[in-house]
Image 1 (cartoon, helix red, strand yellow):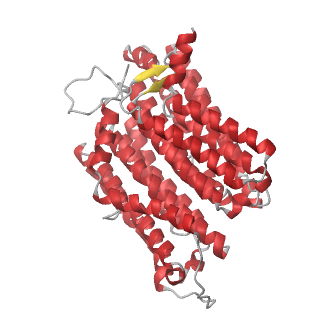
Image 2 (cartoon, one colour; image 1 turned 180 degrees about the vertical axis):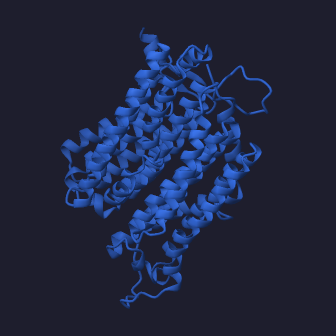
Image 3 (cartoon, one colour; image 1 turned 135 degrees about the vertical axis):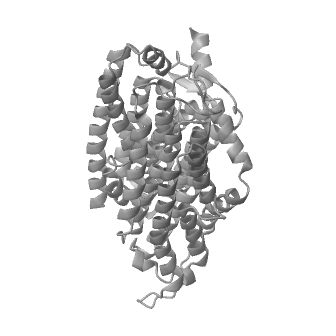
Amino acid sequence: MLDTIILNLTSILPEVIVTATLCVVLLVHLFDRKNIQLMTMLTVAGLLAAFYVLSGTVGANSTAFSGMLSVDPFAHFFKIVIVLATIVVALMSRTSDEVNAERATIGEYYFLLLTMALGMMFMVGASNLLMMYLTLEMSSLSSYVASGFTRKAKDSSEASLKYLIYGAFSSGVMLYGISIVYGLTGTLDLNGINTVLQQGSSSPLALLVATIFILVGFGYKISAVPFHFWTPDVYEGAPTAVTAFLSVASKAAGFAMMMRAFKVMFIDPAATGLAEGSWALLSGIPLQHALMVLSVLTMTLGNLVALWQDNVKRMLAYSSIAQAGYMLLGLVVFGNDGFAAVMIYFAVYLFMNLGAFYAVMLVANTIKSEHVDHYKGLGKRAPLLAVALSVFLVSLTGLPPTAGFIGKWMIFLSLINAKMIGIAIVGVLNSVVSLYYYVRIIRNMFLREDQSGETAPLQFSIDQKMLLLFLLIPTLYFGLFFDQLVQFAQMSVQMFGMR
């Protein structure tokens, strides 16, 4: 028994390190409540240790805790994304005026951040519907509190309440869907569910209803239409660092969990006559068509509503919804190419989206505004920040030579290879629409003068500039040298399958 427990804990050593780190942070907070530097150092040190362990376990493929968790390259890839995102957000938080305004509870903030990260790390490896639900709730409950962390801001409390209400409803619907699946199959293990469904003895209507209910839970986590209503208000009201974290790490965990669930539960391993790397859905499950409609609605609504936004943070919130739509296109393919494309997109999305939110946070710290008109003249007052923000926005659009182009190109290429030309064209047209509201910010920074006549340069510290460059350089690098990233993603998908 003891040997089994030790083996299981060794399999999830990165998660154990994060757990130990959040415990240390909470204990230190009891004795020193306002030391932001110490809290940041402890958090980042623990996350770097977890990242070091992850870097040494590439290629591992096993299970832990009686098959409840998968420790495979697919989960490994997303854990790297989540840990890196958490490190960046922890460093962002150190200079955030919104976070620093709550110095007395700064230890609780980093505790919440680490708890969210821990829940997400478990989410990406969950191989049992009950484990999926528990890890989703672990991540969500801490997210609700973190969204309302700035208690003095009225919109922050409103954001937290809306997040809680939508989250409670969505998780309840998902849990009901899980109960239906258990009633149909007698098991919550993903592989066991697939085995029962292959026999064709389950009611097609009940299975369809259960799938839709489970999709509601996933859709809420990834901000897909029509489960997106919480996103704009929460992203605008939450501290910018928390918003950035939710837009990348939370979305990555949600996608990873959804991809694992649908691939393992609903793919027919006995299908023949398919092209290499393609998968066939079990008969009677119209999941591909449902995801197709969901992706088109998500990217279209996100981009169209973003056109009317004057608050840059809210604009990026709708942009994040649209980005989820692009990523859903990769799931529609139901093959190695599509899933690998989604993973590549997340790897580059980590840098460009966190970079955009970080630039917005630095501007808000300095000029105390997030309105797009107040970005006029920033090209002269803060040239490095303006250039970096422009690169991030161009990358989010998907233009070369940035990393965003590679991410979208891989998704569109997977659609073309799957002969889904029409939906690929819809994705391209949506990217063209997004260019308008991104360029609006760039135009204000470089081609418009500040009406107030303010010309004093904006001052940023060395460490703020270094973090900005840390996000900027990979956004440009992966736009030119992306072979290793593509190979890593493709290897992770090929080794991701049924036990």
